[in-house]
Length: 275
Image: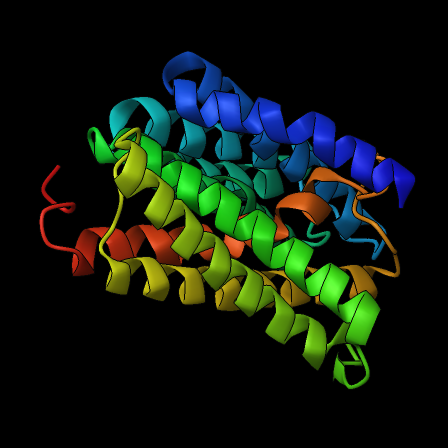
């Protein structure tokens, strides 16, 4: 617990600064997250004797993030083409049919999971004009509040298992706590933003809907990664963050919630989609 708190307190200001600064600092932070997550994913797959190419998954994930951060997603198709054709080329280059069905599937999925999803978060920051800074910061804090609310509420009041087959430690009470904390954080940030004028704020309805979407999708993302880890027979996807595990363990909620949040913002909220 102590290591978990220390890492969280040390990492949170860095993440907030990167999101607030935007540009190269933000892109560099997201690029690091995507590349480490992709590498952890490739190693996780190998525990099941699968063999996705780590260099290919890492490179494609990086392409998705760089495209989103600097080109507003105009070259997403190029990154997808790269990993799709690259994965098939690697199978041909082997000269023998070993894992030739599973390898390409894992490589394409891994790059989408670690790179494309995080790229949607980059688009929230980079493609929504002046609104992007405040909304991206809101998204980050909502994800954190969901994780913290679920963790601490579950520890204090958890009784009923949420999904014992996937994650025995998660409880229904913890999930409810995550939703409550996320909604509360959205309300507080909305009020502070309106009062200070320091960042763009959504209206009350959209702020609450976004909070519910982030909470629900974030918890699904956590369970999805738990399913993958249990199938791979590992407790944590990595070791780089003491008390948390790896980057995949820390950002699993981001990966699931970011695309939903991004498309909600640009498709549902008037004005944001045209920025």
